[in-house]
Length: 159
Image 1 (cartoon, rainbow, N blue to C red):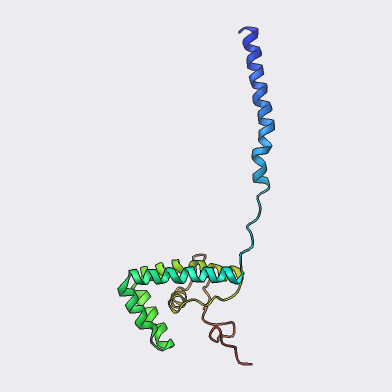
Image 2 (cartoon, helix red, strand yellow; image 1 turned 135 degrees about the vertical axis):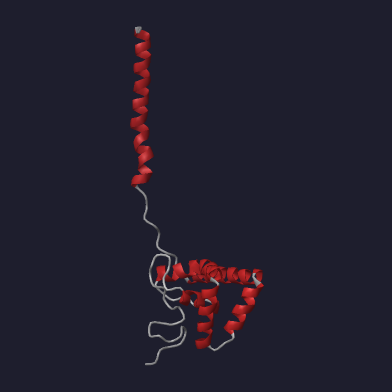
């Protein structure tokens, strides 16, 4: 090899090495300074938006599925004790409906778990949550229709 070819190669290697030294830290810096996930937005406005979006999606789902809408409407008019048994039976016979509705209300359930407070869902959402013994993460799903004392949500427990 001639001296000029060797000098060109040395020059290219120097440029590449210098570029690696300059760009290496710049490329790695974003990984080193990754921020932790932000705290969940537990504001009243965010809760209202999340519940509203899930409720609208549930309504759209039921309108798009008239037989399901009819059956769940009929069940909703029953006394609470009887209604829960009817919901359980319906969702056991229709697991896809249960899974679809659970997916629709998943953001509400997640927000409730992240924020540590109960969110009052629709009757259908409450029934879906009560028929699922565990969430996807394997954690027991709380009965969001009751507060910690076991009384219905929105009702003060006896003193």
